[in-house]
Image 1 (tube, one colour):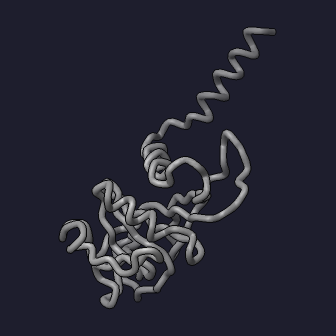
Image 2 (tube, rainbow, N blue to C red):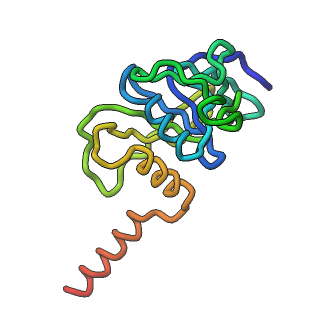
Length: 171
């Protein structure tokens, strides 16, 4: 079953065949991050407006016709993806697998952050909030988070177990 598309402010990219919806306030750096990811060989699906709809229990994001194949950055203006990169650097639509929210914030320091969820039409997706002003590269942090999502092992659980074992040995 297909639902009617709903427009959302954001950028949709494909990183290693995973659809990543990037959200955040205007001017936070969503399109600049997409440009960096394009230079790393990933694909742009939509910039500025992402139309989301359901298809066979999957969230699908697509680009509205007016913006097809275009990326807009504040410094460079409109970029024709096929001209600057190549035709394979842009796709019309893609399933959305994860959500990255960019936000200037002092995030709590924790070994076990509360898992964030993005919900659309009753489907929940893993989400993470990243501060674009952290000195570590946004793209590197996204790649790391995606690897963590793909790995079923919970590193915080491993650490807690080691800590408990160490404390038991010292008693």
